Image (cartoon, rainbow, N blue to C red; front, side, top):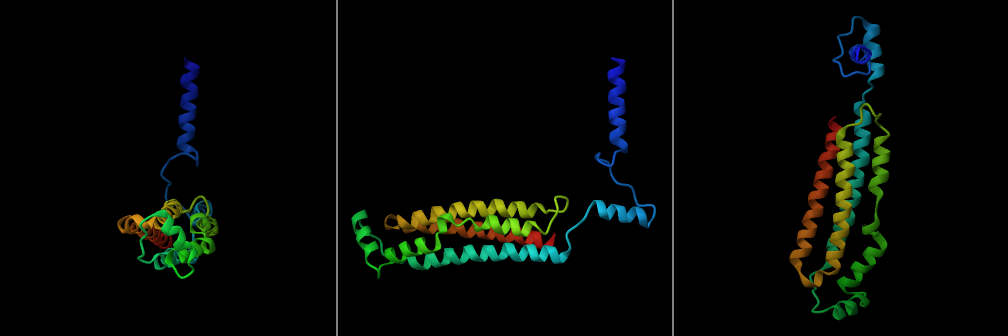
Length: 189
């Protein structure tokens, strides 16, 4: 028992003096100590934060553009049944055919470019100075991409309810707004 108490005492004493323990750093005594502190805990420069923000904001704009293009193509024509919708998809002048082409060209359901944007923006940070906002951004963009895919499917089934399309579109707009707020937080630090 005495050996165990002695061992625990040594462990706790080590944590108090260890640079890896959760202790509050003391004020630097001189310039050398101050420079060591800076070297141990680097921070992203404002230019790095701005560059990361630019990458994230460009990706948000990319998704917003894809979304707005699709919204513009849906049109207002609803079909009474699935057969009528299939006929409309074969008519190149119909909204259904234009939307089908949009899906094939833009591939919104499988566009995962936000992952590449995250990787590119994250290179401006180290594990010590990476802002939580960049992690929030990638999470929110993941939700947005899922909701964008859901919106596309609702739009395909649009014949049944304009309300459903509008609700799905609003969810995508909210997701994009959250991601934009996250990107601003990355920029501002």
